[in-house]
Length: 140
Image (cartoon, one colour):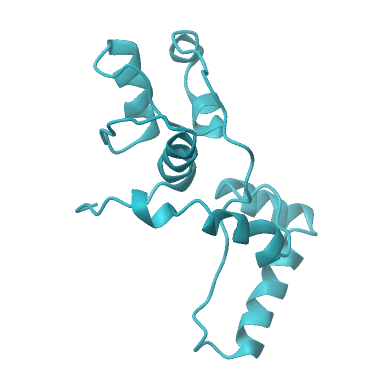
């Protein structure tokens, strides 16, 4: 699943009555190149992958629309994982975010800011979008 580049935009566009026919090309870089080459009129990506593209690629693209921000990279556990283990892992991630070395490690895996999530504040609004309607099963 590609939340920010696919599920979220498709759900928000559908909510606003805009229908699209998705075509999947595996990576954000491929999306950008498909648009540049004209094999797709538009495509979804995320800002950090766009910013990592070479300047000559970025100059060929125009951002048409941005989704509202949502928290990224939730770390979740099955209910069967003991609460003490979940709390310990959560504390470890939060501690990494408090040290320069930890922040450097987290940045390498695109986790620039680690915060304790609140389901009601951070993720419950997504339930109203019916994201499950936009999941596409693939062999990836």
